[in-house]
Length: 402
Ligand SMILES: Nc1nc2c(c(=O)[nH]1)N[C@H]1C(S)=C(S)[C@@H](COP(=O)(O)OP(=O)(O)OC[C@H]3O[C@@H](n4cnc5c(N)ncnc54)[C@H](O)[C@@H]3O)O[C@H]1N2
Ligand code: MOO
Image 1: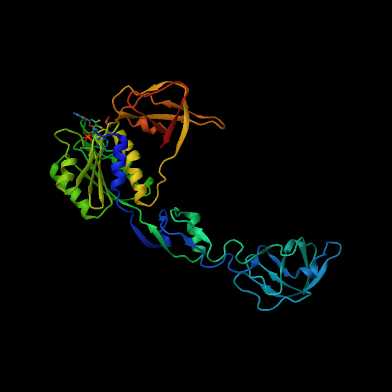
Image 2: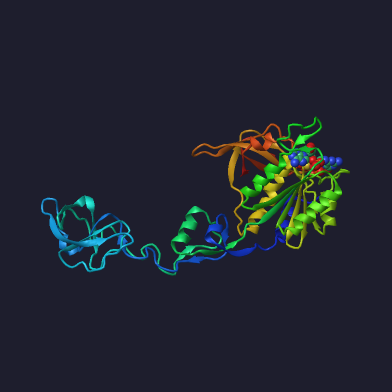
């Protein structure tokens, strides 16, 4: 058996390069940029008004007050999308809407509330400063400025920025594609009304499918097979033919007569990277590689499957999409003593209580069984203790949050 660190290192050394593509903006959601994005033009694109009101010359009305208004002749309008085609000379004003081009000659906008219209004239009742309520061309970005750095994840705000600059083809790392293969003769679908007394419901399918989505990857397929070597081999070969990046198998990875994932993977042409890690839960985790495809044999026990996904698969899926940001951690205090009395690295599930301006407090889940979903559902994260390691009462430790 290898250690947790050794397993992580082997995986790091075997992650294929993240796939790249230039995709339309509409298809880029959730992807990470592989190149900096540079402003092709200034923003704002043109000098425009921040308010509905009147475009004027500062010099005409610098001293205007409600007691001593300044009257200007209204000569036209600059509407958003329909600019004024003329020059604002001394003594003149142009009606302007928010976002409309500031007409030539004007340098200041008076908002509507500070004016009074009288026929073809507008009285300026108040003014604060030269250039007020004018949004200058390039005041946010000049052409050539950095908009988004490589490695940025593209979501609502980032996509809006690219759209605003007309960047419609985006260089991204493609989200990795995953095929899920769930093995187990004892499995029934969750909605099976005829479930037999010797069957259990397949909870790993939806758990892993959701975890794949949470990890930013794309689930291409879910195939369920019984504990049959032939079915397992065929299903693995089909996943390889579909050219996915990662094949995730659930169950059938231990040493029993009916565990066929390892032999299935090797028969389908995979090379073993490792099998069995000195850890609890998730000891029999299998990792294999064939070309640029990785295969994981996750243990069937639901908690083991989830913890192996969190520790090993999730970081791989992150690297495959061009990022290393995976899990959030925090330093917390344990009021109780926690010990690893076993021989394997122990991923101990804990609840986390957070209080403002205080260290978070963790409590070990009373039940840690790898068949007990409550140990992950009601936990907030986990701590890692090596064999023989003791966290004394009130000791501090890093918690990995789910
Ligand atoms: N003789 C030994 N037996 C076992 C060892 C060992 O070292 N020597 N390791 C144990 C450990 S640790 C684990 S973890 C499990 C892993 O076993 P498998 O990966 O072969 O998984 P299965 O036997 O297929 O299933 C284990 C358990 O999980 C349930 N299961 C399976 N699939 C699902 C699913 N889709 N949804 C919900 N539950 C599932 C299954 O019914 C079993 O109860 O091996 C130990 N044995
Ligand atoms: O590794 Mo198993 O996950 O201890 O039950």
